[in-house]
Image 1 (cartoon, rainbow, N blue to C red):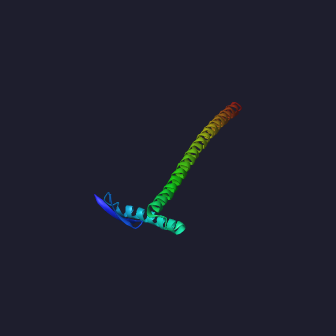
Image 2 (image 1 turned 60 degrees about the horizontal axis):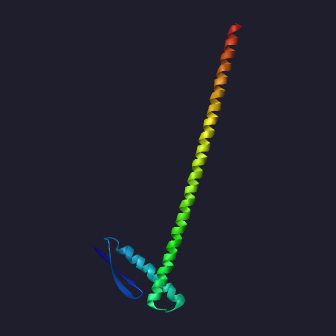
Image 3 (image 1 turned 90 degrees about the vertical axis):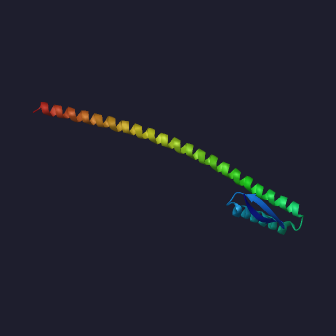
Length: 124
């Protein structure tokens, strides 16, 4: 099992992780540490535990919002897919109708030509 060593709010933590995940864990810790620094800048020294909890809550809120936006976007995408399918179905039906009309017109034209040919031959 691999380990990542991270510093959060002035304390060092050794975290067990999967091999190759160390850099990811370290980056997450840097993001948390940056949020802690931002909050300290805004609120001053209010206690390590409280500032860490506030940072975790703000990051959790961002994650919640991102998940909500993703779900909304996925729902919109599904609606767009359904509309696209409806348009495709309508288009296919319209093409089938147009094809049937062209075939009927072609049949009528061929019958008319045959009738004209028969009439023309009867006058010869």
